[in-house]
Amino acid sequence: MSETPELPYGGAGDSQAGSRSLADRFRRHAESLTRSNRSPLYIQLMRAAADDIDREGPVTRLFADIPVPPGSVPQLRLLGALHYLVLSGQAPGLAEFYPSAGGSRPPDGAWPAAQTTIDEHFEQIRSRLHRTVQTNEPGRSPVLFVGLLWLADRHRRPIRLLELGASAGLNLLADRYAYQVSGHVLGDPASPLRFVDPWTPPPPIDLNAAAAGLRITARAGCDPAPLDPTNKDDRVTLLSYIWLSRRGELHPPALADPGVSLSTHRARVIRPSAARFPSGRIGVGPFRRSPRGTALSGWDDRAVVCISAWPSASGSG
Image (cartoon, rainbow, N blue to C red; front, side):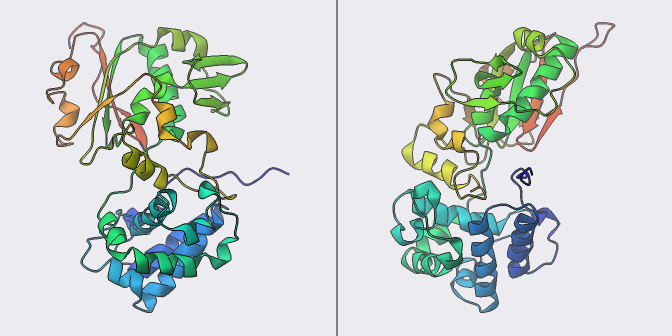
């Protein structure tokens, strides 16, 4: 009997929170994880945090005067902050419940350790609750890469990539990871990051031909708070937002070190307004002007969206 598949990362409809209370948003997300059979540790922590909010306990005080509009996923901000303390070695008691830090204790006893961590690191956690959640790690690259292959197959033009909310820019390197499909390896066979059979079923195109014809001539991202994956603290921050699986390890395990995604490549991430970024007028070398005959493909890490058309058949731009 097959296991229930783990769903992609997400806010469990937090953008539709409306006037729901903070505790309700925590519980709503916990129920979503329960239905998808994911991460018992996070389910336990979210439910316990919701109860703490109802009692006007420390979690209520953590979020005092911190804006949490719909879609800001405050529950993931708190879990990311706690995971950061675990991964950085500042919460050894709580780390006993996190296999990502070598722990093996069952999740049903985690909340008292989390409370102790909150008490000991209250201001540090509170400062991290102002951060947006950055879960755009390379586990999303297979979806982005297959979109690029489709573009290469259909349009056969060079592609320039722009990513909105790029974080550390790891998904701008989607073509530089390895994808093993039906005995063939697409992308970079030398990449230390390899996805095995990432698409079920594969798209109905000649993947090998599309991969051979894929030409990315420039890539850049924007983010209001970009992270540097070569910086130790930023790497821990990136890891802290990666979901724990049902078994508790980082999901997926191959992505446990963002540095593995870099290889010899880097993608530039800058801070301009997202409203200006898609226009191409962002002052980043190859994006100052749109070369004729190239495709401009823009995405955020939740969807692949082509935001400028190829020249028409008549040749007009």
